[in-house]
Image 1 (cartoon, rainbow, N blue to C red):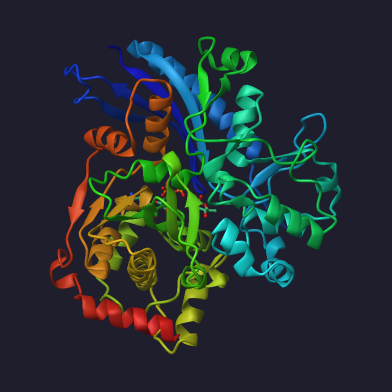
Image 2: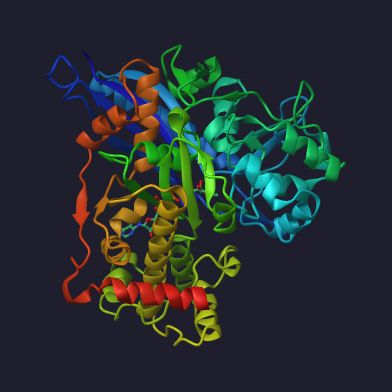
Length: 517
Ligand code: ADP
Ligand code: LRH
């Protein structure tokens, strides 16, 4: 009954981290005291790199960060006398690397915030209706869905030379193991998957190639897309050279987890019933529900709700909300201008600004690309006849209020469109550290908020690995119970902010203001 440690590689849009999840058996023989202790081993910055006018990911630096992290993780595991149980990688969705016939990477993966997909969804929908898409893939329209990125790249020398397409976590997994697979939760964000069968859609792929003949083969023996695997599949042991480089014992398995970071984060939600909504709150805020089956109605398509695939046959029914990206980019803009912009100070100042003075539609397309967010927010406020935020504190307050309004709308609509009653909102991810945002979410939704874990994706990653390795057993509810035992949770109730908490009607009015905007 030794402790087994699993290395969770979790790459977020703002930082990558290698986190050790120690599965500690506890004294009870029935496993009822088993818990997971998370320990951050390394963290390295991540973000878009512009080269020749195109935004990329610095994928080799991420790979190096993973190797350095795994080396440190192995050392730490040995020092504690734990068993090193496995490695799993999760990261953001939709982006991919292309390999040539020799298996060499053809250029750095392009970042989903790059403008190459501007106008592409409309071109695609002229050929294959958005209704036809939604009926099969159930996916929200985002300009950066892999499908649209491929159409944007169609006819390029790089795509023509490609023999294999690997989504980012699959690419990094292939570099650790030599084996190429497509993990299904992330594959569901490509637009090329049938959400009901959890298989590549021959219908959609066929229609796409018919409409855009310069696209290469995607399916079949000569196709770019690899075979799908479900989370929990052992991909392969660490390749010998990698194991040597990181000092790992031979045979350590690399395990496919919910390789889409949001899928892993949802596994870690410490829910105790099915009546929960979640906000996976990092660079993006992913707001929605866990369902057994997709919602493919016309109303759902119009509301741009997505049906992404989850662990254990589940569906993540959610909407992408622009998230703390707005705050990150504001801080970056201020720093570049030489203004002091310490996050805790800014949040403390924002807490003193009256609520709901100005709200903007955080999901407006103008907020997607990197740039001067304070200026874009001020412009959006003016356009909608509101007072533009002036100070840094007012800008931060506007972002947080606007996010909370967006969460309110998404939680309510997810419930209405799916018929699921919701009685609690779980917040996971780095945004959980933002106490003001958590309180505003409780106020705006009128529901209790349970905040934690901060490293949701890493915890979900570890839980799925531990079950695949036979260290844990049970269904998602069982995994969640184990996960919840090890993490601090904080509860926020509507109105809990005292005089600073506005009642529901104010939030409803703010939402109406946005819809009318
Ligand atoms: P990602 O995985 O997308 O890179 P994270 O889940 O790490 O994102 O969350 C990053 C966000 O967490 C930051 O944008 C920031 O707003 C928030 N955050 C991090 N640390 C703090 C803090 N000390 N106080 C408030 N917010 C924080
Ligand atoms: C969050 C996330 C989200 C995607 C976006 C591209 O990190 O994976 O679920 O929509 O990145």
